[in-house]
Image (cartoon, rainbow, N blue to C red):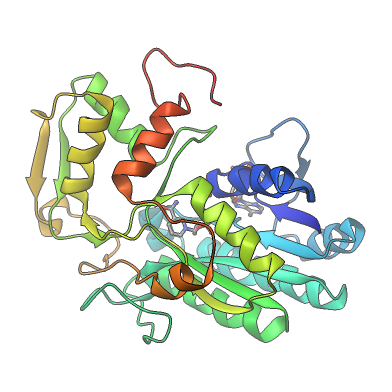
Length: 298
Ligand SMILES: NC(=O)c1ccc[n+]([C@@H]2O[C@H](COP(=O)([O-])OP(=O)(O)OC[C@H]3O[C@@H](n4cnc5c(N)ncnc54)[C@H](OP(=O)(O)O)[C@@H]3O)[C@@H](O)[C@H]2O)c1
């Protein structure tokens, strides 16, 4: 296939470019604020530029991991969140439809209320925060705009990342600096290894498996437990980790607590194996990511 990845400077987008190319597909990518050699600049909020870029790409598939995923920032900037997570992707999905291309949108377990996770594809969304709402409305908008749309919901994505901003890098930096790190024991999610999310995405597109899919790690963990696993894998001291409740963190946006994604449908249908946190963290370290001193990533 020929593919365009909108948001290839992000962690999922970079993994997607790699997965597409390593499976023999032709792929180009875009960035927004963080320029990366070889990527073209594209701002999703410029709908005319989005339409031009999609038409010019002559792609069979448009992958759109681009978006605003800082949950507390979205809470305070709802217009920006809706523009990046709903309206921009909807414009790209309309352009994909006009070009008879497929369209892949990335969403989150934050579309659910966290009352009884893990959630399956057939459970009803009920987002608790602006980020979750912008993603839920984004899902509906792209499914309405493009007949060949695929919605991939994922959760706490980690793995090798150029910008080194995912949860694993944040914890590693704090831990190596000897800083305190407070982690909620009542926020559960499904840590997801970014190369697996990318490989499963490409497999879904290759099989034209449209509709909604949960693509995440198979183990549901609270943040504190995930942090302990990270420290164990990277050989770090855990004495500065403090277990707290979500209420004690005073986060701006309300999070789903008993969250996470049921991935039985993807596991039954896909050849791509979705690795649990221990295996994913081991693979990340083996790839030279997050280690100190840094090594070139494989
Ligand atoms: N990370 C998670 O834990 C997680 C969990 C569940 C769902 N998701 C969803 O999965 C997707 C990928 O996540 P990620 O971790 O790869 O995010 P990320 O690393 O923050 O990457 C986001 C990408 O979107 C681009 N972007 C942001 N605003 C844009 C705009 N206005 N126009 C065009 N591009 C824009 C960024 O470009 P620049 O960096 O160049 O500005 C970057 O390439 C997101 O949609 C996110 O909501 C993520």
